[in-house]
Image (cartoon, rainbow, N blue to C red; front, side, top):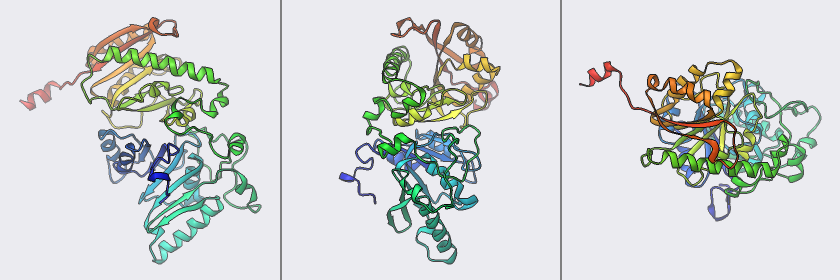
Length: 416
């Protein structure tokens, strides 16, 4: 419907990150993978129950989540396209606040593909909804890029120009200048339009390179953190070497086609995930809620992730990830006064049987984890210090463990 050149779904690498709301078992995201498009598939645990569990068991990126009262845990301008196919969301409620949350998440010129009976049905209620929704998105400066049968695709403007030309007092209003569109942890949604930064306004877009060059090109938003291009390139190279070292340690133990869903529990700029591009895996990049909010750099590299506080449980089903990478995560939660034992149990819950955990932390942390290996039914696979790194990390040590496939004595008796 969008008529991209050569009928190329990713528009020559310009469409890379997608948000699928009310995704079911994530078949939309699964279909896009072969086009080098990665979707964050989002659904609540509703009447359809464990759809996100099915999605993750298929090896498709997915997360439990709901459009409710709090912002979704993603920074502004993260996705080129949002998708809702019969997702049963009332987009008109509370002055269109849910649609405005999508607007916050879409990049300049981003698309919202909406497939629902309201777009074509002729009964009175559907016509009313369609009329009100059309009026709302027009006031938000979205335009119809394509419409066919029950599907309409709207496009967000590239600049602030349309917002400035609206009549005074038009709703929804622009967000206050002191509103941080990237603050997401526990932050309530607001029924306002997030205007573009001066950079995006001048660039008439996000200024990102097409995929895959995007992965290794310094993102424009690096400047928000005072990071230089050199720091970014050094970080990318450091993690490339570290991941190579990890794989040298892991390779004797990895069975073919057993690693697919990976999680980087403290992803920083996403360089761990970037180093895995040539492997048939995807990475959920997690950014701590109280550190630098570098998740926007991760999305600008064409990767996906979420914000989290590791003093709490992660919003996923048990046994949904094949490998967890914990770089100084234990040291961080220790400073917060949270329980390291609880974190070990949460990691065990998330990890599949025969899955791996890579812990990169100080020696006392490694010693602490070792005490619990037998109780958790984990086995130490390899250890290494960080002296082989180009960038010495002081006293950090690497411990790789594997979760065993085990049964309780009661289930063993039952199986006999």
